[in-house]
Length: 427
View (cartoon, rainbow, N blue to C red):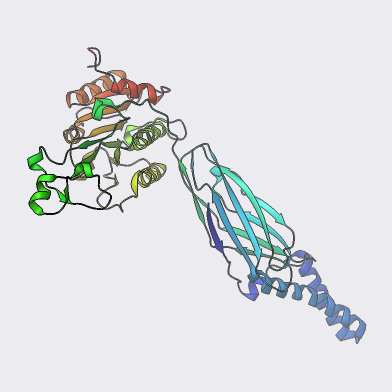
């Protein structure tokens, strides 16, 4: 749960007087008129009445103007990252930080994007000194993205209805709506590492006993790993180095070119593609893989210019947040992929593609040569059937395993197809 706290500016006294309501302006006008008549007619009783009518709205303005600086507000979001279609709850807390008087009636309005629903409005009773009031509302979106919440608008009124003063707090929050993901079968295309469930294997640091470079014994080392020959040579306990873990690697390519996709909004092919990429990333990260995301724009996460993420969870949050923000690009091809750094060895390449123009697969072919196995999930129905067949044939000739993504087909089915051994009809 995040919590932002803010104190809005008090504003000028002139601005405060502009908050006079119709009743307040009427009282002030009547008081000034009565005072003028009393002066002309010499009526002291009318002068007192006029003074009372004129002073009451002025005092209300001064009290609210001085008192509204004692009101503080905070907003909490639980949770701040949700999957599309899920709800998050926003908590608002208003405090009277002063020690003198109670506040007037408070009218709250929080600014939210229209996609999250109507603006929530609340009426709060007067808050005693040192007290607070809490309210909450729910927000949800069926479309991924980052949505700003705030600023909070506060309207204060006096008990007589003479003045209404508006106040805006500066604190804002961001609600991140992640793309929905599917649960995929525990298999891996290409058979890398023997399956998605066993992504980490250990490799001996050196080939044979004579090649081992031992290190000094440390407290807690297993005595079964003592290297006796080195111990005799150095005159102190020496142990064999630990086996070096090796994590399977996967690069996920998301095609964001606007020319490659038709339609937009929930359920569109592009949104399905973003969900497919998120599903693959989540599936492999859960099984301990080292995963990175690239796009046709040259985006690379984690990349050389990216702050290192803390473990799998940090990498997953980094990539998923990027998938929540990703949008169509104006790039006509995949030329920007040339600037993407090469992986530190063989690995799996998963591409989620839209329509690739015939004869424009060369950049994808070069990317393919950097990896040991490559699968292209290509959205079907974006072009004429014969054109799509030629696209698929060119990708296969470039070394890709092509899996057409038919609308409405769960990714789990196509993921299993990609992991199955090729048949004579696949090519």
